[in-house]
Image 1 (spheres, rainbow, N blue to C red):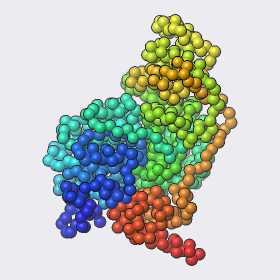
Image 2 (image 1 turned 135 degrees about the horizontal axis):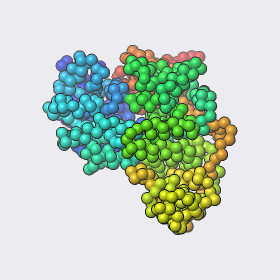
Image 3 (image 1 turned 60 degrees about the vertical axis):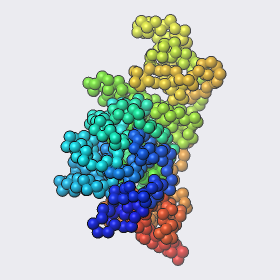
Image 4 (image 1 turned 45 degrees about the horizontal axis):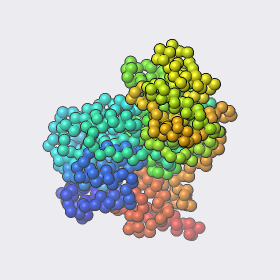
Length: 633
């Protein structure tokens, strides 16, 4: 049964069962009403209301919002409140399918149009599109920008264009896709149709590039922040990685997670090892057949697999909210990649963990992959990104401060929820050394990178340094008593704390920020971390307790598991992943509230009118059955 238009009675025979049929009707007046009745949410998250209102009014927007922050609502709700169909650009077929399944579960008329469809399905979608029966259509960029499809769209009433995963537009992004660049033509073809671009992963340079390519220079910009406070970040020195992974997974039995590896061979080895140890694990990489990759992805979405071991080919299309952990068995190539991949954990807002196993050999491996390219400009970008990733892995500063600082979002205090905060390093008064370093950056004209500044501080006798005349600056040799590693650690910490900026667009040169002034003038002191000397097994140190499982924070995990069983049965009957029926957060809220009637169900997070009508009777019966058996027993 499809969704009846908001504020209207269920459609009769021959009527279009879609929100599209009710657009423009006075009953559809409130985006708050849509949020509650369609999605089952009770309040907007930060920035959502302003973005939605701006698009409904016909404006353009560029949105940077963390994974799990609610990006999809920013274009879905405006598409339901504007005349015509919303066209959503998505890079992966699997991602389209997940989004469409979730929308249909809420009663929204959505469809995708892609190469995986058989001719009959494709014709049906196009027919529905031309009859005005769709609220949202998901499509790949190359298919959208074909001449034939653009001409087709010119005949239709369009609500908006939404470009998801917009970082794919930029060569500065970690997942650049040339076909995305052509999307800049949308503004020329449809100048009066609102356009919104959204990404979770973009540093300042990438954001500028996205806006330029998509013609969004005058768009309203919303940067909702990059912090994912429910994720605990940790890095362990890579020593016996198989044993380290086994120990980590022992704390995450029966939970969903992803293990990322750099090569297909490593993926196969790790997956086989986990399966042999009794884990429900499988491999995923581009070398497998398309059918096998679909099987693995579907099994993971349906909770039939605990762990997917994968290359970075896996994940962008995963909209699974209950991933409780992400492990990087090998070093990611960039902070953007690391952020996006770890961001696949805890999309439901419940506790999650991100573990990186870090070793020097990984750095050499990634660097060799970069050097294989013939594109010098791209190699320069990727070298900088690798250096930033190494800095994060080797950081002695709060991981969250380093991560957010990379994206231009300073954190005023340590997070208290990462491995560095849990087991802080020894600190020392670094005021004088920091003044030397900052002064050296200034003396060389703020036009050189980290290694050159270190050479000046240590009094290097290199010919290049002499040719530049930097052996004559006042800071030459001021830090000769300290090792190169000591200075690199100090400079990295100054970057992480916001005293220095690395300019990615200009060969990673170091520049002073306003925060450096009072430190240089002696108006403040600075304490930094001493570099650690690695001793003992990797990952030792004070550990926090394993994050609570979704059903443990209300005192009745038994009911939570009972509801999981009901959810699984309902999902299997419909052929959809369990989270499409109800996410873990919804189940946890059902346990806390224990609703007794259909009206009370609407107060539960994630249950709107359509889900209440479709699943409410079975959910209420399951709660009553469980409570009845417990009372009798």
